[in-house]
Length: 399
Image (cartoon, rainbow, N blue to C red; front, top):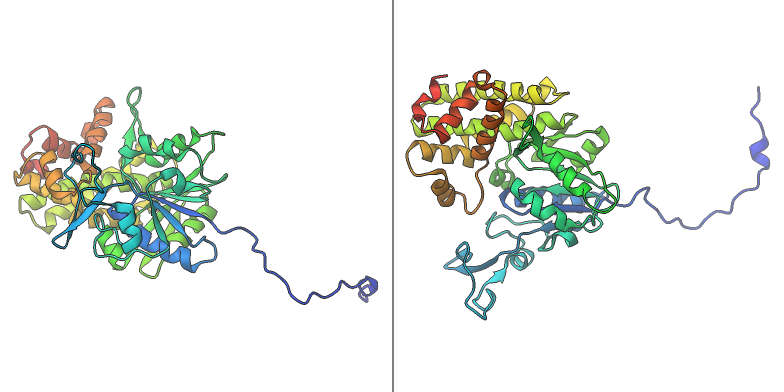
């Protein structure tokens, strides 16, 4: 059968001499909420990809908790914690400069990531509402105790249909009732829903074996996106993935996020071993038991946990690197050596940042005691006893 000739008798459209390309969608506008050590490190990846990929707006605003700094003898310093400028004066009068100004002029976070150049399209901003204004993709990298005071200040100015990704490694618990664990990503979603119009922001997480300074320097690392929708996982992979930062997605937000929280507890046990001078065999045992108890804890409280998640970067890899490096391990080593209380050690070693492992260990034990499940989690129970009940650190091997 011959093809119809109908098409040949339709009037032809006039040819255009030129055509303007109109993209199918507008570029994603990315906001980074947080600028500590890890926030500034991940900015080195986000900035590069936002600049290079047409899927993203070039400029990325980074919210910075404003501080005042000045350079003394080649080192940037801040006023003592809790200090106030002399009456009638400001810190600027005393020779200090806002940290946001220094970051934007030097393209370096001189306090939390010194010596690393930030991409020039990363713009430090002290006002979080301005930072997220019109944002379609929001990356959260702030201590989880900052969520309640900071998220309301966003004033819901992000775009309709915006999505979020939490890089926050921690967990909260219900204060009464079943005292079940609450994912930080769920807390973020709930806080943002309080804005006008009750927007529901689809939340993903990025977790993995990511020591911030190593990632910032460009040492090869991997990370895992835990997402609810594969299409959003792909967006986040495009934003974070670089030649030295390999990112893959799994549709298991709870599994990935719990790995990121519980590894800090296990790292305390590894640090106790280091403080006592125990070798690699002992630490390997702590890591194995810790991973097993993490998986058991996740399945106890959440549905849809995938076994494979624990073999991704967010699981085994992150646990290993945290137990050999990182601040939780280092502080637990100092504790086992008798170098002071947790508060003393935190002040001397963490440059104003908070220790997450001890907070999580305390909360985990609260819920396990409530459910009378301590015997099923012998490592978590022993870490808590050493950290808070005066148990000899040597008992870490007596499980």
